[in-house]
Length: 453
Image 1 (cartoon, one colour):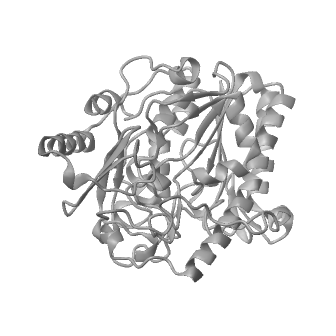
Image 2: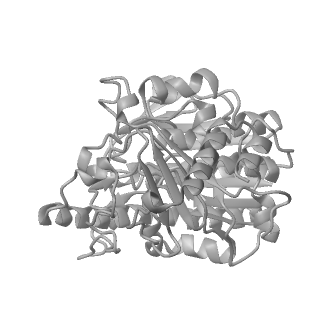
Image 3: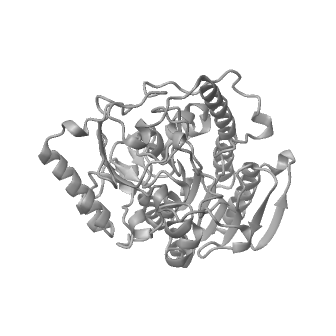
C-alpha cells in the first residue's frame, strides 16, 4: 500500500470549514475526533511523528537548544524512523517541504529518504532555498515560486514516476503554511473580505482559577483583537493552496491508476490559538485549541464518511504507515497502528484510555538558544512553564512543574473555562498524579498502552 501524508504547520480545527477538499477527503474516508499531538510545538510533534515515540523517549521537547531541535534529533533518533524502516523494506520514500526546526538545506538529505526537497527558514513561502536531492536550489518571488505550489508539483512528479515504475512509496508533503507570517498564494490574497477570528465562549476571557502564567496577563485590547482578525483571514487564505494540493494529489493518483492502492492522510503538527483564553497568537498550551488537530484518512479498505472516537495521537502515525506497508509493529514505538480503527472502527486489542502531552517551558531552554525560533512567544501569546497533561475524550488534567494543576470537564465545559482542579476529591487527584507518573515513564507500545489503563 502506498501512503501520501500531507502535514500542515499550525493548522487549527477552525480552519477546516474553509477547506472543501479536506471535507471531501473526510466524506470519502474516516475522521478521528479525538486525535491530539504529544506537544503543541513543531519540532517535538514532528519528532513523535517520525519515530512513533513520546517526547520523553525522543528527548525532543523544544525547537532548539539542549532539549530540542534538529541537531538533537539527528544525534539519537534519525536512524530509526518510519522512513528508515520503509526504505529498508523496498519503499521509495519522499519528503518535501518543512523537516525539523534548525534544519538548513546545507544539512543535506537525511537518512531514510530516497527523494528530498526540503527548505530551512522558508515560512514566507517566497525567496527561500530547497535542498533538492542534494542540490541547493534558490527560489524567488514569482507566483510559480510559492512554496506549496512547488512541492505540489514535485509530489505530482514523484507519484507519476513511482506509478510508472510500479514502486511502492511513502510520500510526506509538509507545508510551511499556515504558519506565520501566514503568506497566502498570490491568487488567494483577496479572499474572505471582512472575515474575523472565531468567537467562542473562551474568546478574550481567562478561565476561572487560571494558572499563574495566564492569570497575570491583561486581556486583549481592541487593537490586538483587530490584528487577530487580520491574521485569521490570512490563515484562511493560506490554507487554500494546501487544500488545492490535496485535490490535485488525489487526481494524480487516479490518473496514474494507483488510487486503489494508496491511502491519503491529512493532519497538522499542532493547533493554534487566536484570542482564546485571553491569549494573543500562538500555541504550546494544553488547551484543545493547541493540542487537538485534524486527522483524516481515505483509501482502499478505509470506511467512508466515518468517524473514530477512540483516542489517537501522533505517535500512532509511524506504526500505522508501517502497518499499511505490511510490516509488523515494533515495540520500539510508543504508539499503535490505527489501521484496525480505520477499517472496522474497533481496535485489534487493548487501546489507550489516556492521551499524553509533554511540554518544556521557556525556563528549560538555554539562554539565547531560541533567539531565532520562529515559534518564540511573548507572555501575552502564552508561554506556559513546563507541564505534563493527560486527557480523555471528556476531560483534561494538567500538572505544572511548580505543582500547579488544572482540570477541565470538557463534557460540560468544552471551551475549558472552569478549572475545577481545587474541588476534586483528594483520592481523584492522587489517581491522576499516579497516571501522569506512569505515562511519563513508559517506553514501548505495550508498556505505554498499559500505563493508560
